Length: 257
Image (cartoon, rainbow, N blue to C red; front, side, top):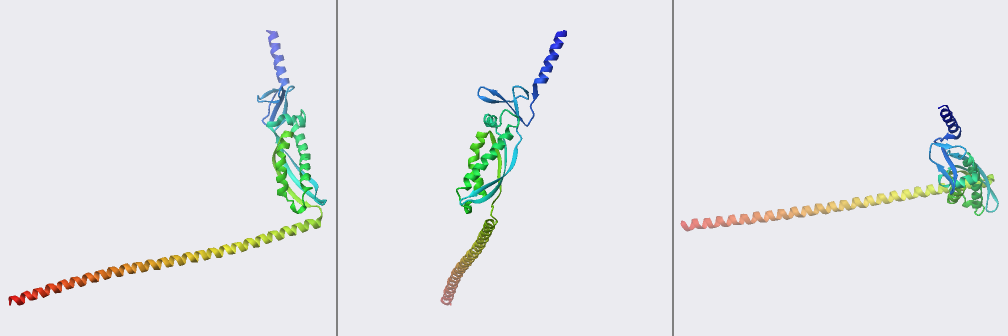
């Protein structure tokens, strides 16, 4: 009995030392024949497993690049990445067998983003560049990179884009301001034309309705006149029949006399 109690104590001690409780924000991975697997149980052996946090990693990156003609530009972007459950093998390869593998992969993603931005800006005139175009180019390429790095890009935002040269930056701001003013004036003129067309259309509809109303009145008057004419004709015929009957009655009286 004493040996059984000692064995149970030793077993409990081994379990308490070896096994850990998986936290809700952790992915517990282990090595298998296919590469890397995920443990779904709440308890896991700590020497045969590696917990990787599912917490997102955010970073802000300032990239000094150049447009066509060696015009220096500065782009600031913000991104948020997280460990990809579908590509844990790639995450372990990039970040290593470590709890902060996702953080290391996020650092690699910064280097990848730097390359994407530079390859896009160096082939285009500075007038062709904008925050939306740069973000569109990155989003078109970053999915494949996320698969290779083992992370998912949750958000990606270009916070600012401007030339380093102050004169060029001011010239672009003035050009953008002129474009906005021109677009606003064009919209105002289009609104005026649309309002004039609406008034013309309304006047035409009112004129058409008034014309239809006059025609309706004329038709009603004609119908009333026809009814009155028919009634007058009936009255005349009735009076003629009465007079004829009166004459015949008078004739009969004369014959009797």
